[in-house]
Image (cartoon, rainbow, N blue to C red; front, side, top):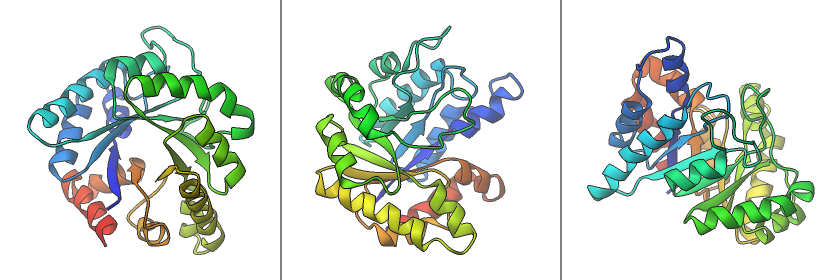
Length: 256
């Protein structure tokens, strides 16, 4: 079964808009886990505009408590490994060193981006990613690299050579095309990249703008997807239906 990792960044966005402690991302993580989610994703950025450094530790403690109770929940930290420390933000690798998540997803985003909007250029980036990947793996993390749908086998071989364990396919172009009713080409690009990754010995994750509307078609086309990370749409839908029922609805799609 494809695992569901719930991205709770948007809970932190809402909290930060008032400058107080509520809603609490830790409580959101707990509700998602109680509803059946297999993982929790956060993407702390250097400007800490949503998930903050202290959130990373607090969410990690919540997940560790579930492990003690006998349920293995995956903690997935996303971030740009090349972003330098800034203020209280110690840098992505240092955050991973402190939190020891099950998975570190490396993303080439900058402060000017509202959200991640492209994958790594592996022809240009694989060599400098390799030592970072090695360091993160030495901390016990699985390492996933964010890549564009359509990334070819030659590029994915570079990812494998750099030591990556998985890729995460950037699915926003597919989601936009699905909303327009003409998604065959973008879905095919996702499928080709997932198949090429598997041929290289890499696992395939997917994420970005996935929703209850478009997830089923992606899962049917790539039944071997290891994990999907979903935040924006899931939290938006939860405003109307509730967080726990929405998580269960996604799990039902993935189990179909």
